[in-house]
Image (tube, rainbow, N blue to C red; front, side, top):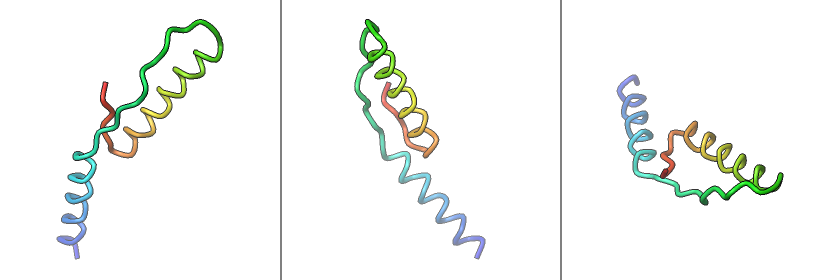
Length: 57
């Protein structure tokens, strides 16, 4: 049983390494909306990384 778990874990890791997400660029901050836009990009990047997926910088 342990071998199946290890194989599944390795397959899951390999599947995550094959994915890389490109998020929108941040904008120059001119008002509160722009701050929110940039904050949302950071929040999304953190959530994507937490799922084991790369984010293009």
